[in-house]
Image (cartoon, rainbow, N blue to C red; front, top):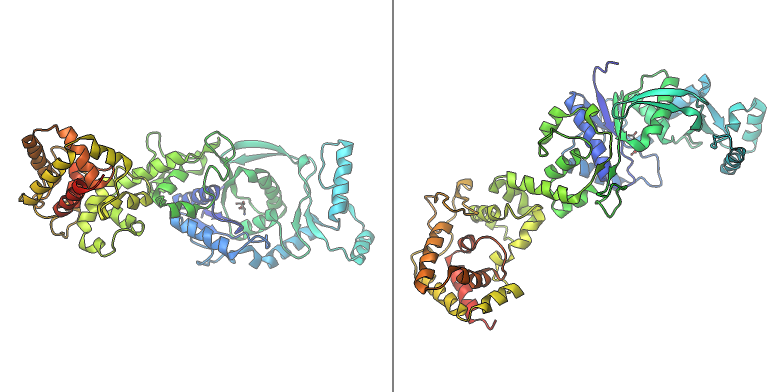
Length: 515
Ligand code: GLU
């Protein structure tokens, strides 16, 4: 079968947010369309009027945009095959239903829910195997039909399923599958109010929108059988189907709200990086190449084939998602990371992003190995932005050495008197080449910066030697005084970032404090 212009779609029902499974379905359709040079469209399946809301639609669209999944046709974009909202396509469903009724592929069903249930129970009692709708209305005489109409009954339109046909179907993911239609009901296509049910609307639209490939969750596999039969009845070629396995939790069970956020935007709001989330979701059922887990959208598109989607359920693991975020955080230059993190750094005065850009780049660089989410940076900077309250560990470190406070005073006096410049040198334009953190042993010293971690270290070690104490004992009270904690970047990076004046005043404050 040749598809000259591949057309794929994501068809969400706007009855809730974009969740992980939906995002993956959208992504695989998008990637396949992009890989084949085709079209990717969005179709909004809003026929469940009680549950569909514009708010959900907006959340779905925002989720897709956040992940970088763009669409060529659909809401906000229009297109030649619209409308793209099912509730605006009712006339097409009505016309197609009439055609199927006229051709004998469908029939009017006047049964009430109670009658349907009673019929089902009867079949069940007969243990005949099939226990669905008993197909009573398939064979109504015109007189019976008129009588029902006279009672005021409003008919559903039902599709006539073959009663026991063995179908051999090919699924791009599952391969060749044999299905017997004997277990499948004559399903309702259209309600009396003219609103279609999913399988019917889906086929009418897949035909109308010239869809060539459908990638969707495996829960739709049997729907796919019903849909194939409807394509056949309408004399239309059905798309190639790929039914992809469910996403499972770490234990191999069905994913629940406890395992993953149900709204993709929650990941955005928690500071996850969209590139990393995209990359991670792509791997839930597909792999890029044996030895690489981190790749760009473009690389995915270049490599993606629907046939390569795996047959077995993939497991969602938030730890791995975090790891992936860290991978991205570390790939950027400090300037890029700073730009991305800026919305999360509400505790940094906004003017500083201009006046202290290279200082902030050094701050960010210093933490690049220590964070995974953008939201993790700001809370780590408290010690840097204002003198911190000392935590328990820092207080212990301060008290451990009886002479500790006198060292702090002496070091403060030494720094104050030294010819080291008062603080971080005036900010410079070229941000990237001024980034020297985190400092590493033997790293070449930048020409411009005289208050550098390396210079501070040399000076500090010489000072400690003169004092005649062990360097290891000196470090802890100093760190406690400067950061209020026993964690964080290397001590000389800390001194470097704080600048001489702040170091001096913090050392003095800690030395004179009651702690
Ligand atoms: N609205 C359906 C769903 O969200 C679409 C299924 C399909 O792609 O055919 O599950």
